[in-house]
Length: 419
Ligand code: GLC
Image (cartoon, rainbow, N blue to C red; front, side, top):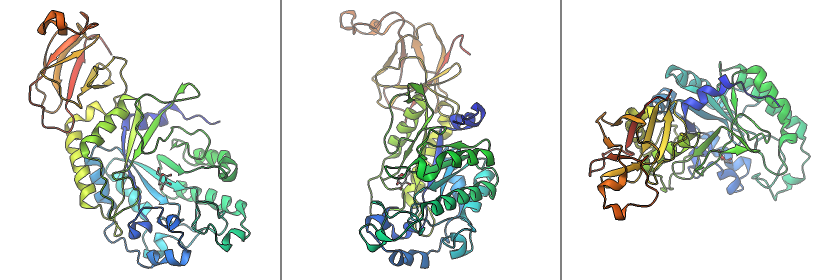
C-alpha cells in the first residue's frame, strides 16, 4: 500500500478549511444532484439540462476570492459527478462543458484557485450513469427498465475511468487533492481497479492527497454530513480526516430547500473539526447559471468575518492535550492555546490544569486582555459550594458579562515554557 509522504499531508493538515463546489447539469434541475436517479429519468429527459446549460455566471475568480475571504485554503470542484457530465475538456467523451459551451470549467477553476493562493482539489465520481458500460445497478436511473438486460462491459468503463483520471492529472498543472466518490456493495476496489488507479494517481502527481472512497485506504477519511467529536482512528491508528458538509443538506443547488445551517453552527463545526485533528470541507452548490446564491454568499461572508480575526486558532492549529472546560473547545498551535466558547459563561471560566502555566490571555477578536487568577475557582464562590474536584491547579479567567459580538468568541492563552 503506498503511504503518503508526510510533506504531502502537511499542507492539508495546516489548511483545515476548504470549499467544496458541486456544479453540473443537475444544478439546472435545482432539486438535488441525485435528481436523475431519484426521478429515474431517462437520458433523453435529462438531456434538457444539457440543451439549456449556460453557466454564464460561473466566475471561478469570484468563487476563489469568496473562498479565500471566508478563510478557506483549498477548494474541490466536481470535475464529473454521478450523471457523468464532465466540467473539463475530455477527449474521451462529448458529454462535457467544453462541447456544450466551449468552456473548460476545471481549467478555469484550477487557474483561479491558484491565483488566489488556494490549493486545487478535484472531485471525480466513480459512478457514471451516462457511460454505456456502467452497470445498471440500484442507483442507476435506468434501474427496472430493459436497460438492465443490455450487455455492459465493465472493463471498458474501468479503462474510461482510469484514462479520464489521467487526463485530469496531466492536463491541469499541479492538482493537490483528489476526491473519489464512492464505493458501495457491488462496486468497489475490484470494479474500479483501485490499486492500479491509485498508483497511477501517485505517479502522475507525486504530492497529491487522495481520499478513501476508492474503497482502499487513502490519505484521509471522509465523514459525510456528520461531525466527529473525537479524533478518528483506522485499525487503532490515528488517521487524518475531513468532514464534508452541506449548507442545507443538498450538495447540488436545491432551490426550494431552506434547511440551512446558520453560520454560527458552521464555525463551531469547523472548530470542532480542528479540535479533533480534522478538516472541514464546506459545500456550495452554484445555481444553474453558475453563481452563488445570496444565502451561500452571505454565509461565506460571515465565515470570513470570523476567520479574519480568528484564523490562527484554526490554520496551523490542531488538537490540544489539555482538558477543556465543559462549555469550551480547545485548539492549540505551539505555545498558543485557543479556548473557544460556544456557550457564554457568567463572568468566570475555570480551566483545569492551567494554573501557573499561562503567561497572558486575550480575546482574539480585539486583542483585549483577559484577566485571570491562578487561585482556584472556589475562591470567588462560597467555599462550601465549590464543586468538588476544582483543585488548586485550576486557572480562572474573568470575562465580561456581555458576550463579544462574534460568531464564536475565542480566548488566546499564551502558555509558559512550551514550544
Ligand atoms: C455522496 C453523494 C454525492 C456527493 C458526495 C459528497 O457520495 O452521492 O452526491 O457528491 O456525497 O461527499
